[in-house]
Length: 227
Image (cartoon, rainbow, N blue to C red; front, top):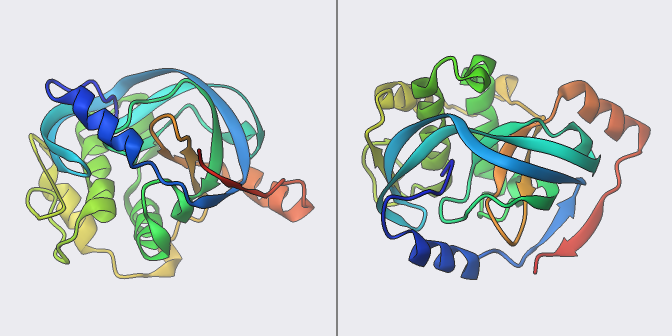
């Protein structure tokens, strides 16, 4: 969730989240040093699922400062969407990994749903704080894809994830209902930050940077096991 400053029950949830951090290997596309996390472009919602049980906090676009990086980390923007609901944001060096290899088990199928959702409905105006309620709706739609176990997507109900206090919940459900696997909408420049010490974030790398680095073979790709 986009700030992890929960109203109640926070400490226990964070400890569980840290204990369950994935130890699977991942492809490192670069590294980035992020600092100064904040929730300037977020709204307030209450969340069940993903390790949370009715806790209230910020939802929507989260921001920080990219103070330096390597590989694709040099192109990491100063904003993104959180994908690990039980983790605090982490100031420091983090890996940049393929979306499907983020610490939260996403995998190829969910990653493709996220790529389609992004390609169809993401609005860059949200990163200016122009419409926090719509940014919040997009954020909970992402969490619905990642955490829901019920095959019928609905951000207001479900066994794996749901949220209340989301003013544009109907819009989020409309976006989800339109997902049909149409690759024409896929946003292929989505990756994730990854750290065993804190929150992982969904981020969008500028497409020209992605193409140039991959095309020239200057992207250093290694394998590592998360601590």
